[in-house]
Amino acid sequence: MLVALTIFCVLVVFVAVQSYTAENYLGQNDPQYTGNFATEHPEPAETLTVVSYNIRYGKDIDQALSELREFRAQKPLDILLLQEMDEAGTEKMARELQLNYVYFPAAIEPATKRNFGNAILSRWPIVDSQKLILPHKSFSHRMHRIATRATIRIHTAELLVYSIHTEPVFTLPQFKVDQYTAVLEDIGDEDKPVIVGGDFNSFTKASVEKVEEHY
Image: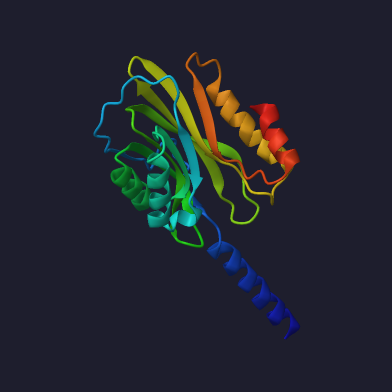
């Protein structure tokens, strides 16, 4: 009886773990979602306004749109970096804000059963995009985090942009460093300006300093 109960408990734990395991997208650039909704042709600008917004599980899109419209009423919104998005929410935001976009999901998130990933939106043309799979899976649901990379053309100049979402606090510090390093290695010797932004899951002064140390 005790053996049967032990086996049953092990099976319950195994099923629970399996049901909360992310389904990672390990293809280099698959799946990919893009759209072009920018209607204006911006004049050359000396400065760019870049905003990063983690919309938890891609919910409350309407609230995020309201906040971004209020922000845009005060200054131009040139580039928007989004995290924890699905494809439907990303397209809605790009369409409503009249921005071009590229979106890569990292995985199907086990809690929501929806795609979970990062997007880059721009009022300038996006001429190239890639998905960068970051090293190490999460301890909790075995998800691979990613960075979405895009080359944005601003008239005759090009800008390289990353929307990154690293592991939260429940990981080894070295794992987070490895994820920062993966982006730096991907940048390599690029001769164009680079912007790296997003959710670094850095909640303490020490973790913020660690990000600054690497970037």
